[in-house]
Image (cartoon, rainbow, N blue to C red; front, side):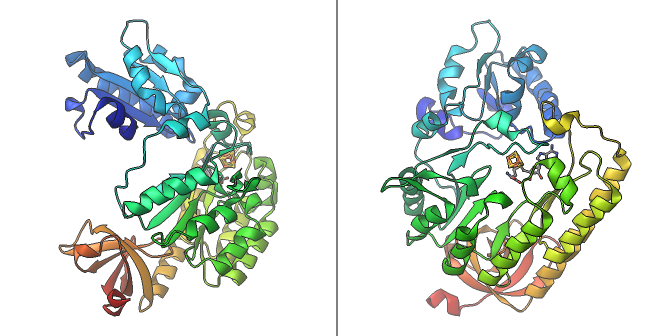
Length: 425
Ligand code: SAM
Ligand code: SF4
């Protein structure tokens, strides 16, 4: 959004809302809390706008997509309401607003048009996100994404590659291929037909300057043999996979309409570990899905132990209006859900802590990303398994891969020592 407004209207970013001509709130509707936060945020900007009536307020993202004009009814001082697929039209929408007829609303789904009209990417760090597909056609029973983001649409390989090359030229060394279900990628191949994610990774891995390729977020159903093979052959794929499982119970998975069983998930991870021994596996979990019993929940804990999941995301189930699960009976009391969430998080944290401690004395390939946030003179980068390491070294190393000996495991990061041999390589 900042790129579009800079390119077309010469606007620059400010952190100070008092200075802003345009205030944009980007929203997420996956869970209820962020949705409620929108209206408390809007209240703050309402007061600012009273002082400076020329200021424009826009609401974008999936809450905008879901609530549409209803946002304007509750907050009539909002000027523009736009969805995830129409952010490229922001300059035009802002221009149309302010005529007194309420907010301008544009929530269409023209995904290809958006990508074609976004300005060239500007790299802000050696690590960049690159959207390769959007939307979701899976319709898990708890999830609002298919309704707010529309059908899965993939960008052609040539477009993705041209963006990757532009990023590489600006010094990007690690690319994170993004999509709601990125392994559902089926983009037009340069030679005709369709390419899947494994094929796309093969193309991107040919770029010499790109040393590491990640992808987020995957669905277990489409985590197939070709991707597992890619781990055997593609060094640029780090030893880390984020593969959301949601639950370890087959009955819950069925009610969630996830399309796989816990045994199928386990077997995919076993195959992956044969292709790439020692790989870290992270996941997403939902606790307290409607009707979840203690026995069902304990199967999730068992899966967490069996797989040895690394740092992961876990959420308490949040009913989303308009989804099938939103209408299910839910006899599980809130305090029980909270207690389960705490037990799950304690288990995952203890496993992740153990994995971090096991890394002490090992040597890790790290892409230096920035000065460390804490610790004078330190620089920081991430290991293949997605852990921040802080270590002593010159800022001239930012943007380079180096080898670091891990000296200490802290709760949220590692400390290390630069191995000078790696600088000669
Ligand atoms: N597409 C990915 C997949 O299939 O797992 C995940 C994308 S989803 C937007 C991100 C995460 O949000 C999910 O993995 C899930 O754990 C969480 N999530 C989605 N809907 C939720 C809900 N209604 N309540 C709580 N967590 C939810
Ligand atoms: Fe939501 Fe992921 Fe399921 Fe799609 S696959 S509906 S994004 S949880």
